[in-house]
Length: 415
Ligand code: LLP
Figure 1: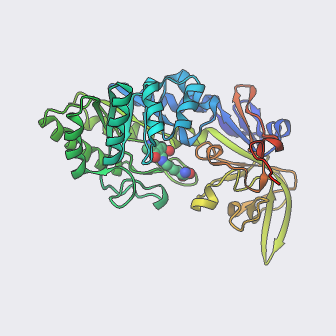
Figure 2 (figure 1 turned 135 degrees about the vertical axis):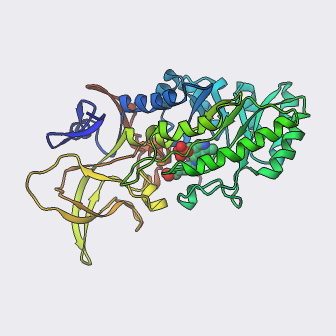
Figure 3 (figure 1 turned 90 degrees about the vertical axis):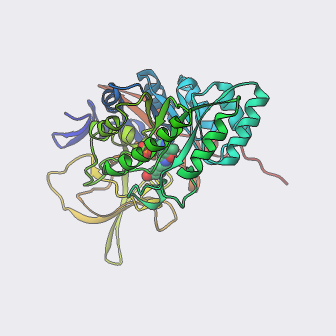
């Protein structure tokens, strides 16, 4: 049986019923399966085992400490994009020596913190950032391990908001510029040119774009080698898609093995930065049906879970599968919009869903582990949701539901 599945009309996470978890901890509730998370990490490790490699979990996808701690214990490195994420990784027991740091706007103080912590590699994204890294490294008297994030001009064929490898977006530097910048960096005694980095987009459901990008990175690798510049790793970023609905992305092995094949004869380690593929389908977001009503010929199922708890449908129009955690043997299936309590028209979890629902039922949003809790907010002064991790027949609170006072604890009034 899968880690998250139906048995006798009840949805289970490992050995525990979703309905009972919701009754015990309340809703909205993020529920992670420890088994499913470990399974996904092991799939990456397994697929990469024939080559030197480092799996750097993209912290932004799910930054809950318990998830990071589990990843760290399994041996993961991390891809971070802020000082806060690096501090989280360290707080969760992760090893800074396995951390790569991406992002177009790293500030001087963030770079200083990262270099002092001894991270594995700074993925530099602009000529000006190179100068900042040089200045900070000189001031600290350290040699900064660096890669350039190269924008290979490849269309990841995904949602425009999460496509990052095209020439006209803000990420990385273009291939032509990269060659010159590598030559400049190689001359700097306070820099160690250690890798070539790229990330072309997220939720890719075919392997073709990443292979096209690998070819481009390989040709840059060879050009650099001919100049006497030898990097020790190639980082192909994250991006492997998952099934939210009917998508059929490659398996981890199918995605990784053609990349490995292209790198077969060169002496580099392969780094990957998977986020979504590691956590999305290892988690449910549980919500409770509060009311139902008809408006203008449309049926609405109103839940206690809003766009502040899960913003993906509202922000990207993302489709996320929603199921009733208890399958009713009788009752009526009605096509409904599943909405939340927030005062915004785009506060919905799903539209036009055929569901047999009663008030008080627990609905489960599947695929909620990636960019779910990490993108949640307190909009409408709603508390951040509780999160639990299930391990076999035990469940653990990994994030307490916020108290109301927590929401405004750093605020003050003036007269
Ligand atoms: N590395 C870098 C540099 C990234 O920018 C990202 C994601 C990843 C790795 C991880 O990509 P993944 O394996 O998860 O596809 N909030 C959006 C997704 C934004 C992705 C941003 N970058 C969503 O909910 O779909």
